Image 1 (tube, helix red, strand yellow):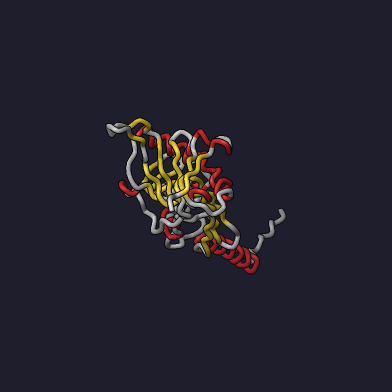
Image 2: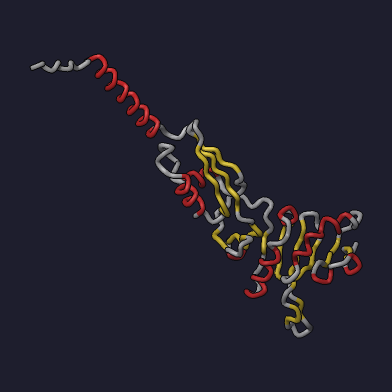
Length: 239
């Protein structure tokens, strides 16, 4: 009977294999636990970086693998001024956050609220109101909603040229409203615009009209009557 030769344990090879497994395991653990190296935020203008980082729960720069991109996006999307957000992670342990803010229409002074293009009226948490017109009084609720809907169609560059907005209904001699859809807008250049809730988007023509005024200042009527240049009404200020 032939005796089977016992296999000897190769200690060096075993130790090398165990060391290899340890290195691999430790490397995976190190990578998994390594904190975020950098947070890059773009697209935000009114929302502060720290507010975005705090909302995402990344203030303490945790492991880049602690939260999924989708989880971070969901948290940031809860900020009222955020319309959409995209989060990407890179190999250098950077998180890139791209923000698209909701369109801000104006500051509602009497309510201390911010009115957004999607119709939401939110608490004012802005440190700066530069480039945002101020709505200085209150309007009929139905007319106000119609105004917001059509005002949202105005180009943001033109909105930034506005100073104040006022509900400006027409009254008869008995102080009764005969036209409750009018609004008065004072521009940063000193001109005044009279418009209406159902067609205030005509204000998109403002820069084109202003260029034809040759430096004159006054009141410009931009509403549904202003579809052609021949219907434009401009009344210079007296003096």
